[in-house]
Figure 1 (cartoon, protein in one colour):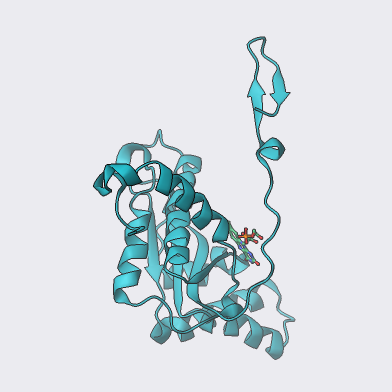
Figure 2 (tube, helix red, strand yellow):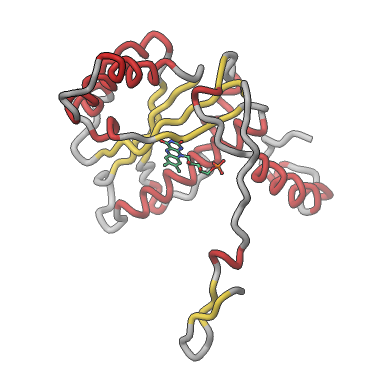
Length: 217
Ligand SMILES: Cc1cc2nc3c(=O)[nH]c(=O)nc-3n(C[C@H](O)[C@H](O)[C@H](O)COP(=O)(O)O)c2cc1C
């Protein structure tokens, strides 16, 4: 069965039962595989297109398209490494050359590396930054799931360098834009045991008719 097909394109008999089994299996099989555990090959051009297209299915209030992804190919990793090193020295002038080299090395991990950027100011100002970040989160989760479906490991990573002037310059961020996280994808070299997931009872409560918040659902 083609996981990339849209539900309305699926034969009627597949719409409910198969997807309702496949989708949770896909979601549960996604786990963070940190960039140091991701090696070549990464997604090829066709797979990258599938992964990027997955982002386009995210909910987007007002269709602002408030997020974008910047691919960092191998040829641009040295420039990113410079930024990582400089950001560390900016934060900690006493950083040793080894620590700087360690920070720089992170830019070279993972065959596919992208930066996720959200725009807090484009379009309708009533749609605030929180809504835009939710949309960006949905977009990137769709991409992680698509990468998982294609057999790749993936991770989101952050770090203080995201807020550095050097990174903002390198990625040409406009004033209202924020670098949210890096997205890494590649072939899994090793994986940890998947973490225990929370149960709905851990994160769901219900508003009762008399205005009480009651645990569970
Ligand atoms: C925006 C964002 C940034 C993250 N940055 C890091 C990071 O810098 N380092 C890291 O080890 N994990 C990072 N993570 C991954 C989380 O640690 C991971 O999702 C969490 O441990 C749950 O594991 P799972 O993804 O396997 O379910 C980040 C996750 C998100 C959503």
